[in-house]
Image (cartoon, rainbow, N blue to C red; front, side):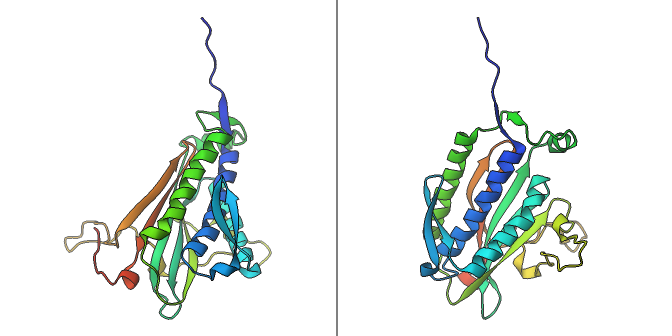
Length: 243
């Protein structure tokens, strides 16, 4: 009787790089699907066998590239907890909807980093084909999302908000050359507030928020990513809050 040793899958670095690229693809596609910019300013592309869209406007492309480049180090070290794409009205500045990408990381990541093992294939991790299928399913769900949401009325713009696991500012905000850091504190209205409010008796309770729609989750066992969508009161006009 012979036994076969399980083959290692992708390394942490490989999966991190794939997730970073996926977030860039998703950001472009969200701006197209939610009509933040005219459809004519986007080019149709394909990723993981799924139609996607990429902005052709130089300034928009440069901004998205800078955003992804600035958050990439936080993913590589396992600090990025959440990336939120906030779509809001130009006239009033109020959020219309939030696209929330929550992140989770391999529990042994710190040990891998200490041993410089982030580039070594991991037992139990998906291989390239398996990860591609996971991301394909995510993109299919993202493309279908447009039909599930109410249209945004009026002209809209967007902001990208990131949150770290330790609630400290991103590591890329430390510049030795004196240049302006890429990240600034987020507006309070743009964020999904953490459960830090207190009731009259002084006990901690979760802050109320607009309902969240769970769209899709990819669980690689190394880096997990989940997309939730929140349609805001400024768009729906419905003052319905979840605890």
